[in-house]
Length: 258
Image 1: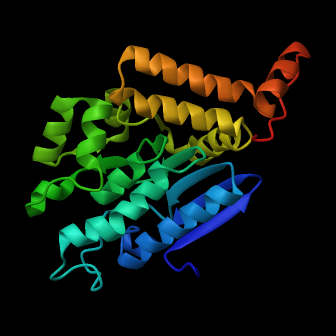
Image 2 (image 1 turned 90 degrees about the horizontal axis):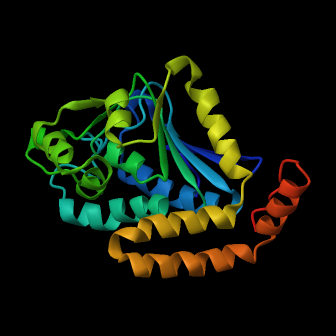
């Protein structure tokens, strides 16, 4: 696929997927959703970590209400099922670690696209906004799933009903995101975090994602069994062997991602 609405760069095991409609605050269109889905799947096959970020001053302002191909007499259920769900699943179910580097406002579906990533790092000037109630809708694109789990029922309900801006600092304090970083240090910081993931034990990271995400559906005995199974698999990996040898030799490990 030839990308027009996004830009994908893969260098040194790291893929950086940039939403590339800066003049529209990277608002989502039918084409952009298809491109994100395709680019995520491609990057997952050729990189060991993926960063999703935005061009210009915004991360993503949500649905482009001026997109003739996806608004007007839009069938919202169809659009969510056929366009949004594949995009969101390509991020959430990505087999390698993902970071949403939120460089500016993340609103509506744009906020929830960010929350699909394994880790959200935001610049301090960014904010998150569940704006749906302002036009008579409910948070979609996974918003009603992510928010209660990550910042609690009370905060999630208030964010959805009042549609207030949540600053990056608030989001950090409430547990909605991993961290808020000073604007002048933001890019260097997320790139350092991303490089760590891109050169780390990829199979071990995948097991971490699987174990933590599965915990909501399990009892403690079930989770203990899942941990034992996954740990057994990790223990047979080349990266585990390398990690142990590197520890004993007092040197940094050279993980291969297998």
